[in-house]
Structures are given as C-alpha cells and as structure tokens.
Image (cartoon, rainbow, N blue to C red; front, side):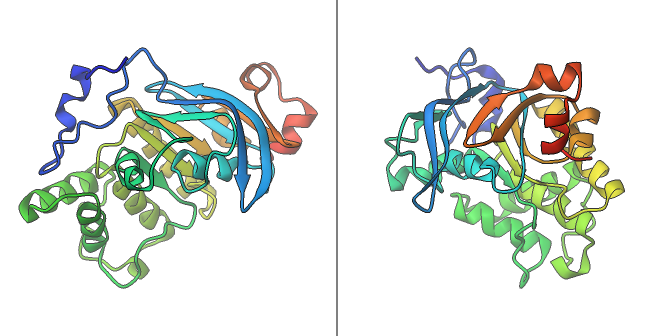
Length: 265
C-alpha cells in the first residue's frame, strides 16, 4: 500500500533517517471520511469528508467559530477523532498512539496567526529548539538547516534578532521558516495573514505560494478573506452550520450572496 517515492528521497533527516510520509503518491496525503470534529467535548462539525493530495492548495473558509481551526487541530492530533476516519500521511488518527504523535508532527508544518515564537530567545534559537525537539542532534547540521530555511523566507540576516525586534510580517516569515525545518509533506496554516496589514499579508501569501510551487507540499489554509482566494486560487471548503462542504465551483463561477457573507473582503 505504501511506497517510498524517489521525489522525497532527499528528505532524510540527520540522525533519524526519517523520509517523511511514505504514502504512495497516488493516495491522498489527507483523507477524512464521515469524521466528527469535536473540540472540548462539543461537536463542532459532523460527517466531514474530503481529501487533499500532494501539491494541492486547499482553503477552509467560514465565519469565526465555524470549525475551521478545529479541523487543523484534528489533523495534527491536538483534538481526538471520535467518529469516522481521518488519515494524515501514514497515520490513522482514529488509532494513533500518544508516542506516535511526535512522528506525525515531524512531517507537518504549522503556521499560526499569532506567530507563537518563543519571546525569550533569538530567531536562530527558536529554530534550534524545534530541531532538537524533533530528533536532530548534530549542531553543525542544525545550524546549516536554520540558515537554509531563513534564506528560503528572505530572513537570512535576522538570525540573531529577538522576536520583539521584528515586524509582524518578519515574525510570520520566521514562523514559516520554522514550519519548513523538517521539509514537511503537509503545511497547515491557521489565518497566516490575520494579524497583518494588507500589503504585508500579500507578501506572506506570495511567499506561501512560492513554497507551494517550488516544494510541492499539500497546503491547507484557514482564512475568512475572499481577496486571498481570488488572488491565489485553490480548492475551497466552506464550514457552516455544523457541516463542511466543497464550494470551489461556486467561488469560481460567481460569488453568491451567501459566500460573500461567509468570506468578507
């Protein structure tokens, strides 16, 4: 069922020999089948079913509290799967053991709206902290990887800075660099432009699209901003009234009054 594809052969991590998800390329990287999304014991969404393949760009849209972020938290095993099936890469999240969760998350890159950088350490130390937590131990290789991802996001000259010395856009670029450290197969981005002005937000989305085109991860972005979807088209799933359905064709054909209400400019 699973094969190692040569496209991902370069993903071997130092010390751990992790090749990332080895799910066959023909299979989706993310698959939900009749899944209930439950947060803090409350049913948020029911009977959620969708797939995301390698290299796909998918948006989760809807009003605040509609369940978008809870889907992401389910995909990284922060929230449990109580009904239905959820598979991410090689992991069945309805059966995943606690000891397996770190291995799942090594192959996920997560970008948050509020950056979530450690405020008491430099940019490079923020990145080093993640590498150590995910199994790296060779200092030289860790410093090299930090330099690589900072170059990828245009922040190679900021490694010595503290988070408070950076603008919001710069902090989000560091957060994206952090998400790229283990060359993830799947990137989950929760309102990555939500705390940024429109010009800075556009720069962050352009960076996300550059990463998408060059490295081909599956990317799932939570947003309520229709302008982003207009500028950077992808599949669109709408969370509303306890359900999640694909509305890509509706978005591409015409913005109905209903979709405008759920995706404000």
